[in-house]
Length: 529
Ligand code: ADP
Ligand code: ZN
Image: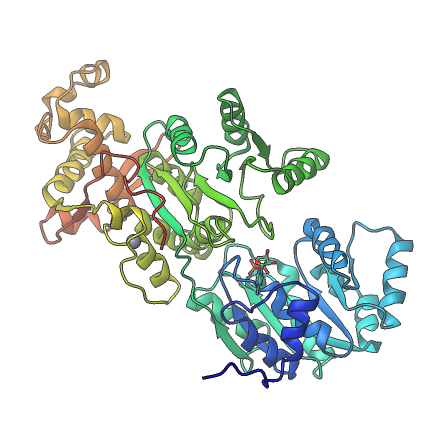
């Protein structure tokens, strides 16, 4: 067949090419854009890097009036606006960083219809003056970016987002498009309900990121492991290393620098100028490694991030997915690597126990953590597990650690019983509680000073676990914690039973465990699809 040259080029494609310089739409973009141009409401669930911004930017340019974008990321508004202006789009923002004169100038330009896009911080919608400004203007659409911030069950809740339904109440005539990269079925429903978008068309893109290789390694010497990863697989590559605390960010950044890596720290404790400078270097220079807390990354648009490494366990699978999603936006092979061990489980469980908030809040945190732990402990394809969490189906990917070096599972019932009954004996016979290390020493029959001191070599369970190594026993304890069959208590990480432990002790419940691989990196690393 001869090529069809008679097809009309849609206005959207024309803007894509002329303004943004791209030849083709990515998956899903065109349908969303046409729908919004035609005046429809839309709820867009698309993974990080999928290209959400164009989904409201192009309709705002095609439709009459100014597109109003609500975004929680004040720090990034300047960057977004600069990028748009560089391609000739008349964009501006209103937020608390501006002085009154500048704000007045923006408001005047907005009212005069001299803008294509106006970015707004959500808290501005609490101001009557902002609402009046919107009432009188010719608005082409409302875009609500990072829409999951409205979900109280989510991990990024922002109270200001609850007020966003006001947009629809004040201006029911204006189409709305809400966008997010976080979308468990529950969050999805909550966004629709809270933003009154039940009747909107829901566009759900696939959450698969086939170019990202997901790997979760047993944590041994995390600093060494990280350096190995950088040296063997990602020399000179840009990447992000996430740590839980500011202190470890500083420590790891310094360690990498000592070892010849161009690494910079980023956390909320640094002064704003240093933070901005480090972020700018990461974005503009090649091959910079950013060592950061999760304060870094939302809205960062750097296409060639080749790896995202986590040295501490993320609190939720949503968070993990979003953080790892910053790798490989350009579609090229990238690595998501996480080091995970017993102490991570102990620490995260303790953080939940000591967190502020009521029992419901703690249960919510615990269920977020459980999903993350299930991903760490699975012997199945990591990708299938991640997609399943987001309500999507997948088949074994061939490009994650468990696919590349299949992990065995084994019947850990007897091992579990040995650990649990040691905890029981200490409590019943001695009224004592101990942490994982000591329990393992008892099982191995080690005559450590602590064991002698407490006379624990006379316990009937002393030395009943010589079939496994120290590392293997710690793996067993970790998995019992992950599965909720053991719990930690107090500041010293002492182990206690849970309601679910009894069934295991009575032999009514079988426990499958993963056999942790000895090798840290699969040989076929960097395989692409
Ligand atoms: P998201 O907000 O979904 O994380 P962005 O809108 O920031 O993603 O887009 C990610 C990257 O992909 C950006 O660099 C953007 O310019 C680019 N991009 C988006 N759409 C296209 C397209 N149709 N063709 C080429 N590049 C695109
Ligand atoms: Zn896989």
